[in-house]
Image (tube, rainbow, N blue to C red; front, side):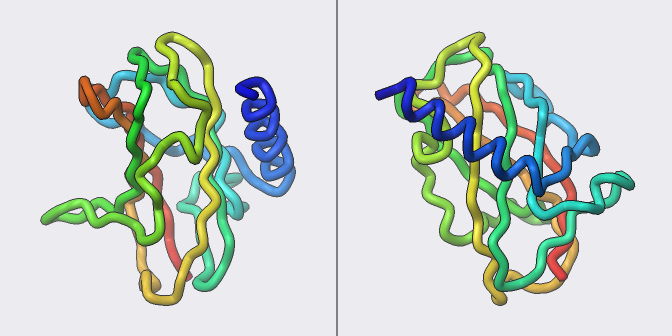
Length: 153
């Protein structure tokens, strides 16, 4: 069953990667306990010019990446937030159960895949965002985290 789930996640990533662009202009959070690479965002033709991704209101989007964590997690949690001066604001309709987006349990020092499918509703607002992608172990609170730029148009 685990192999089938991993295969499905990889196939979804590959299918989306065909219409996605690799985002190289992202940064890891301070004190993060992982390595993130091969970040693909759909749609994001702006990535070809190292510009923030532009997502349209009322559209389907996705974020896919590979990661190698320095920790394991049986019950990982996740959050996508918009970083603001005062506090991080969570994106709506993102289930915090990380097992919906990656294979569980998360294994330490093992390359794994992550895949979010997102709908961008009209109520997000047309503006620039610094998106924080974060997941963590619900027991030890070790965290994997990175940021990338996004503009909703």
